[in-house]
Amino acid sequence: MYDLHHQVLRTDASGMPLEWVNYQEAVRLYHLGQVAYSCGVRLYRVHGGISALTGRQSHIDVNSIIATHGSNKVLLRTRDRYVPPLNNPALFKRDAHLCMYCGERFPVRDLSRDHVTPISQKGLDSWANVVTACRRCNNHKAGRRPEEAGMELLAVPFMPTHAEYIYLQGKRVLADQMEFLRAHFPRSSLMHERLKM
Image (tube, rainbow, N blue to C red; front, side, top):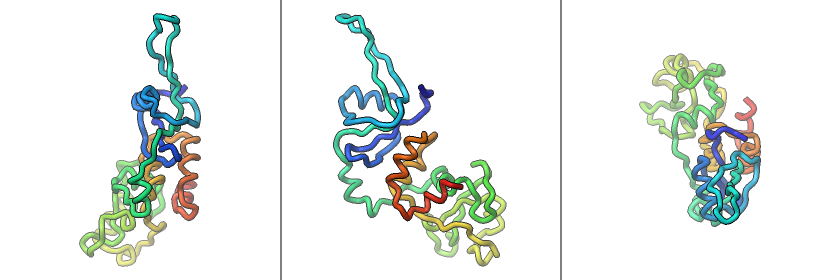
């Protein structure tokens, strides 16, 4: 069994990844009969009360991936136009905690969001214009484009798909959850290479 900090990946009935839920929310979904099926490893066995009739204690087994009834029709309709919210933890994870200028790996406290085309030069605060940079490289680049600062960008910034963003939001993604999510990444996704870093 795993500790109670592991998240459960929730999908719709078709297997489309939707979100991460904690074990309490997963148990609630099981209890309400909302779980269509589950897969992956068993994370938890949560014990309930003891039946006065049988004397047996109830329990719910919670797997690492649960599919709930229904589908997210809004997500299906807007999947091609989906823009995940931009935040530093997801950005740093997208870039494997590497500075996209010097190529070194840094702890989160030493990383920053760099705008490839600076905001002062009409650059946007968007996935396609931001990369992870160490503080030293970001300060050196300042309000210039990489070529103006004599710096080379090591990887192309990109906007993650919905499934990729679900991965980026995960705290401690288990191997079976990662395999499931990777199956939903586009074949041409740059995340495949980033995950090897």
